Length: 72
Image (tube, rainbow, N blue to C red; front, top):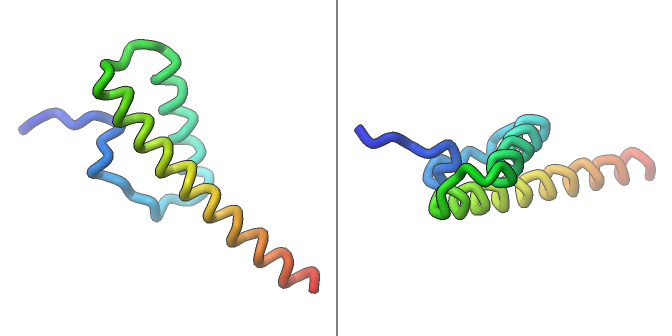
């Protein structure tokens, strides 16, 4: 069975809670900054990070809309 990379894009699970997504994103950033990933793994980490960032932005937008409703 082939070893999966931590940043395997095929395993995207964007049902993560906001805090979990941010923690994973921070971990990916640290790994990329370390310079220890191969070019392929760096690209996969970047792709995963982009998806996590998009997910976090969507969650924040939803929360912002809820706050606006409560303030009305």
